Every structure is written in structure tokens, then in C-alpha cells.
Image 1 (spheres, rainbow, N blue to C red):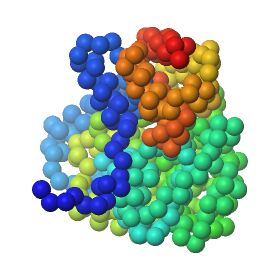
Image 2 (image 1 turned 45 degrees about the horizontal axis):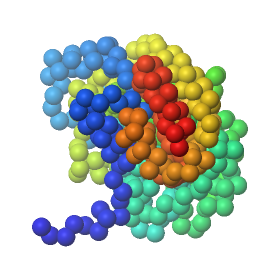
Image 3 (image 1 turned 90 degrees about the vertical axis):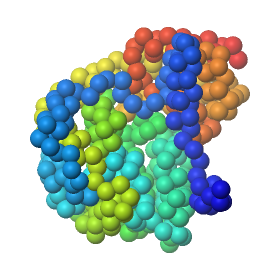
Length: 388
């Protein structure tokens, strides 16, 4: 076989998927594995969403569609962005993609070129820098701390901007930390972006999973100047437990959306047609299903957080959004990969090493799983750390 493209050697495999796959293999071998690895709600997709997709199948919605997405879904997304986020987009400002991840990949392909810099706060979702690399750009990683709840400050952002900066990646609520930027913090970051005339992509996939009366402010809603520089990425996976449906979207400047549509038109073409009708139902029907899942996440967060606080030599911040705990393990003397491998082997508990997110002193636990697994797994985690 001929030599592979050089770009492949520059990209790291997904550690999240690797750990999850190993845990599944152990389960298949009959081992009692408690998995806190996957960022996936354990609930089934709500019935009314599945019914809408079934009806679309029965109605023959099985053909090619517009590369940018069904017009009915793009209109529903525009309505949602106006109602929920105070963002004024038209359907032509929106492209439907094969999941939220694909929306960001298309964005990097359409926007970033060699020499461009993209500012990414760490800890970060592991695919951000890899996408930048595939597009030929350079990731500028800005390290945040637990003391600031893993949030970049306006001063840090300002110092990271150079003449080559094209894009700032904002993720709130955050994966992996669960941090949520307050409205005042969002406004302060918006002013820096305006002052330096760069773009921001706001990844809002966890926007509906919030705790303790926390407020989510979409950065594009701050004022007209930041709106012109904002790109919104979102999807249906987390809030509606539609991870396998692969329906996401991006909203932004019409020329950018046209460019992304060109990229998508020559790669995947349209998103699965009948799945898009399920997405329409998700947006236009009752949101009670989201609230029901949030009740469970809230209880699970409480139990897992309390358990971690009782374990010596580890610490964590209380997440205000998403469904993760980001735990500092530096006092154990182990780095994240070794910690996770030993924990899985010795106690059959699967978690994600923080090195995947840019912090080798931490691990990520997902509480998007059942309470029995959480209680059992946290006991095992405590036993493991005490054994060290």
C-alpha cells in the first residue's frame, strides 16, 4: 500500500472512543463494568420524535434532499434560535449537518486555512484541535484553572490574539468541565472579540442541561456587533437523547453557510432525510421530555459529586451544566492515562483520561448513566484511590 497522507499522522485517535470500546469488550466478556466514559444520555429517544421519523418513512421521505437540510427543519431551527436564544437567523443562514461534530468540521474546512490561528481554551472537547489541524490551521491553546472554574478570562483571550487569529472556540456549557459562562462573562468576552475583529464559534450542544437556576446566554445575542462575528453550533444529541440520529446544525453569515454547503455537498450531501423530520418534532413539540431527563441528571450529579468530595486526594468543581465531573487526580501521583488504565483493569470502572482534553492531571466522569452504576462505580473509584 502507498504511503498515507501526512495529515493523518498529525491527528490523534479519539481516546474517548478507544476507552469506551475497551469497556464494551470487557462487558461482552462477562465482566461487571461501570462505564462513566461516553458522553451519551442513557435514555431512549422520546417516543414522539421516533414516531415523527416513522411517519416520515411511511410518507416516502426517503429520497435525496437539499444539501443544506430540509427547509422545514431549517425554519424550525430559526424559530428555536429566535425564541430560546434571541438570535435572528433566517433558514438560509442555517445548514443541517450530520451531528454537531460534523457542523464544526465543516466550519473548519470552509473557514480555516494554512497559517490561521484558532484560540481554544483548555480543557477542551478533544476534537476541536484535531479539526483545526485537518484544516491546516494552528490551535492556540489557552490553559484555564479550577480556581476560575475552567473558564477563559477576557485578559487571557486578549493576550492570545495575534494578527493571525481568525476564530475563537467557545463551549458553554462545557465538555469536559460542566462550566457555564455567566451573562457578564459572556459580555466581557464579546467585547474583546469585537475590539479585535475576530470570529467566534459558540458550541451550545449542552445549552438545555443546566442546574441551580444557571442562565445560558448565547454570545450572539449580546449586541449587533458580536452577532455579525458569531457562528452558532448546536444539535439534538444531548438534550433529546438523539446521539445516533446524527443531526446537528450551524447558523451564521450566509456566505459562510453557502461555503459549508459546498463542502457538505461534495462529502456527505444531505443528512438522513427522515431523521430530519424527527428533529422537527423535537423542536416543535413539548419540551417536557428534556425536563424529565434533566431531573434525573440533577439527582445523579448530586450523588456523584458528593461521592467525589468524600474521596481523599482528589478534587472537583461542581458542574453548572452538561453531565460531566472533571476530577483533579494530581495528588495520586498518576497521570491520567495510567490512572484510567489501572482503574479499568483493577476495578472495572471506565473513565476518560484528561490528556484527551488537554489536562493530564484530571479525568472526566460522565453521569449520563443509571444510579446503580454510579453508586457502585464511585465505591470502586474510592477503593482504587485508597489502594494507591
